[in-house]
Length: 116
Image: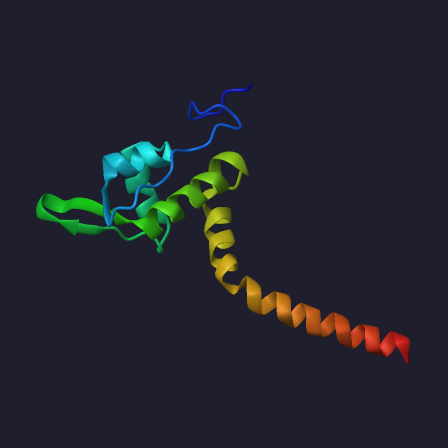
């Protein structure tokens, strides 16, 4: 198998996310195969990523943020998006269901016009 840029072999999966409330930056780095400095950079680039900061400015990530980091990693490393492209794609994913239903309504209207 081909090696990927970050060292994970193509097709190799990430470890399961444990059932914990908070994760340190080191734990998230291991769970997502991303170095801590990359995680800190992504915090600046993606508004959705806001870990809690406690004593000594230590970061604590919640489960949904670990899932988001995996999605960002997938977009950047596996699908080849740029940072701005991944940011746009993440913004679109929350608006996707509404646009799908409006598109379906428009297509049904076109079908009605064509069938009459």
